[in-house]
Image (cartoon, rainbow over all chains, first blue to last red; front, side, top):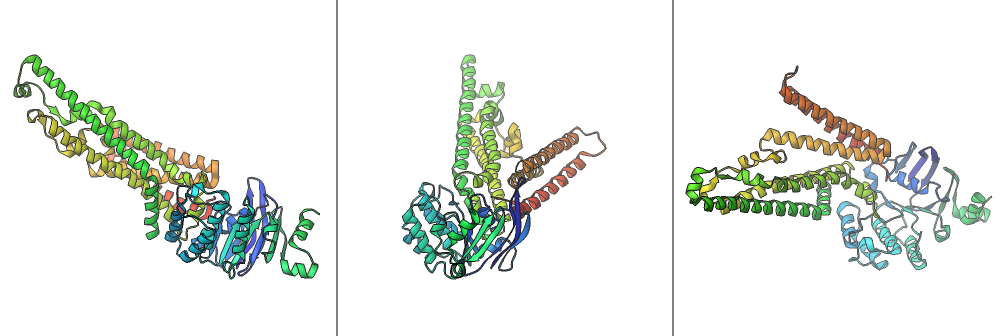
Amino acid sequence: MIEISDIRKKFRRKHVLNGVSFKVEKGQITSLIGLNGAGKSTILKAIMGLTPVDGGSIRIAGQPITHDIYHTVAFIPDRLTMPGSMKLRDGLQFMADFYPRWNPERAEDLMSFFRLERSERIGRLSKGTAAKFNLVLGMAQDVDYVLMDEPFSGIDMFSRELIAEVFTSQLVEDRGVLITTHEIRDVEHLIDRAVLLMEGHVIKDFNCEEMREAEGKSVIDVMREVYRP
Amino acid sequence: MKTYLKLVHMEIYRFRFILLGLMALTAVVQLLGMQMSLTKSLNDVYRRMSAEGISLSEYAASYSKLSFGSIHSFNENLMTFPIMTCIVVLSLYIFFIWYREWFGKSSFVYRLLMLPHPRFTLYLSKFTAIMIFVFSLVALQVVLIALQMAMYRIRIPIELREYNTLIQTIGMWKAVIFVPVRLQEFFLVYGIGTVFVLMLFTTVLLERCYRFKGLIAGLTYTVGTVILIVWIMMMAERGGYFFYPSEFLIASIVFMLFNAALSLWLGRWLLRKKVTV
């Protein structure tokens, strides 16, 4: 389990995170929902130790953040973070070289699933293709948790469908997934849990299925109530 | 260890074209410069010989010989220019080796900071890479001087040669500070250089963690250290103070070792706790 408790962060004088707490469980897809600038990306970066927080704690399977968490958690940022001069082949080699949990067979499967060409240069990829390759780099690691920052933004319809297919495949099954998005329609049918952020707080945290059964509301219905009262 | 070596390899690989370019520039300019100096010096000798109607052995008897040092320093600027270029490029790369990870389209820093290995390895690998660049250029310089000596032996008639060893030759050169011959000089020059690389690395990380404030703090500290070291060296050279020159030397060595330790410790801490993408 990833436990985020009471984390705070401010940029200059603005409090971006004002005591945020929630949990990401294994075997569930949790979506972090908020309007632009709500601090979604900051939370993911904080979990990955890519930005310091001013207070609170983050624990992954009970452990604080050290370089060891990268054996357990993979992060798929909102951009492809590999040098543009590399070819896709070099990118895969880099992952195999440095990540003991890299799974080459799975990378192979994903490369052919997305129909990616190994000889292409990373710097020349279209936005959609870059997003797919980004997904390969994250999903081909044998880790317990995967964090994704806006995996659907700026991508055409068919690529979105392909990416969404990955979520329903066995690639995700036993893992804990935390995904941020402001285009909830793409993931609404996939997610198990929704965490709604507003003004640096968690304003709602619910199990989607229970919400549907108990109150007959979809995620979008709840969002409307929260963000457009 | 394996990760460290792989990262060092990656850093060298990414810099390979610039490094090879610098090497080619140094080799071409210095060898051509030597060739031009040799031709010019020999032409002068032959002109004087024909004007005075004397033979080579008579010339050698009545005029000074053509020492390697005098020919080499004939085109002093041409010899020093590539060295200065290398120094400027490498100095800039001390910063760029870090900033290239943050800026540009790729934000490679995300990936590097998420490697499942201690982040300090990253710091050490970049530092090692810079040192390898420096010493490969120094080594090339020594090879080039040996080649220039071979050119000297081939072109200058034996009557006019004045023999020097490689070490003497290097010692005669004004730019000798870049290739110190004596061991303690070598350690002093490159030791101090090494510590400044560490201090600049940590300054970059301070800037990355605390932006403008960090930059000011890091630069103030580094520049302050430069001033202090230069001041100590000047005092040691002038002498006549309360301390002996050797004591000044020891003081500066201890001070630089302290700075090195502080930079390494701070760099490690910043990478672990404070760095942000």
